[in-house]
Image (cartoon, rainbow, N blue to C red; front, side):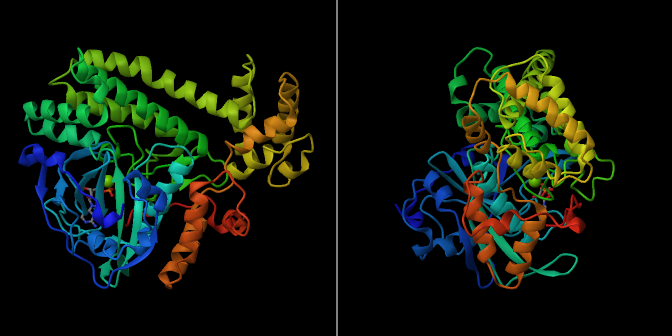
Length: 479
Ligand code: AMP
Ligand code: MG
């Protein structure tokens, strides 16, 4: 099947008008393909080479349409940095329709009803980041929206300086956000909350259809999925940066990649977003923020679901599930198969030691994945080695309790501790090359994004040490 032969449906348009507005995309000038993800295309049932599809570019750029496609922008609101922001909506993303369970959306496609002061555009820099990290999160086994293609153009877009406009064709099983429910609660259109809940059940939780207390169960599913995703973020050192409720997917998927960062040196209180002056969305606060966001969702759903019951579910499920998932992942990252009463302390002491050592989070676990008793390769990457050296003694005694062979432990650890992580300095290098019309590094990064646990001969330059000047920097929200 060719991409351009796909036939789309538009189930969201079966809802009433306030859920969306129809809008035509505004094509960019002189568009060109920078990169495509054949892996993402498979989700749609496309098995023919995207780069040989001569209509791909026109379809993404909006000058041609797939069969059955009707373009629209979705309406939502949300809490941004703790405050309700009123009506937001897709201000620069235009939806094309759905196929094979995946909704297609082009980000940067032009003005919509919801653009407010914005220009409806996305610049090359932020589009490269979103495109690559969507595929990288998938490679890491973290629930995420996907990206099928990255398109560049000659259209000038005004930011702090003039930049070029770009497009990302994003895919998601749902584009409904916590903020979509919040919109219909804020306008008092409570029957629409029910309509939306029915839509969400049909789209994301079909096993709940017709069940007793289906809405409450839907809320429980959202709580569970969110907890699992956040546990995974914490385990890989991912800082989202803009955890507003309009950026929280209803199925717990990671969406809307802006000033995100993967930790360089381990820093619990790291804040990747330059505008987050109070550190609300700092790395260590992501579990609490997600819980707060789930409370906002419960408030929005309270006209149709008993609030106290949702509150009880949130209290009973969220933290325990997140903590259990996180501990299980950490056990695996350390190559520990059996449970031991001391493990909680071992993990706690590890993070204290990492913080004090100023050590690269990803590299530490990757080197640890080959640990055989020689501490030097680990201590060599630390600034302050004292605590970590003590911790390694603890770890060694703990390993003695395991009955798995060293080889098997190494194999297991190498399959969960990634070698390739899209840290900001490497993304920045790829962006600078792309801005000078060299897209080779974007495509190299895509290759490692799918298989971050593998060795990639010839691509080791993508995991080189982070220069001191770029460690754990903050990024602007401008995109
Ligand atoms: P974000 O912080 O990227 O999740 O965006 C928050 C809101 O601002 C959403 O409603 C976006 O659609 C909208 N928005 C962001 N950038 C633009 C832009 N350049 N043009 C129009 N709307 C935008
Ligand atoms: Mg957003």
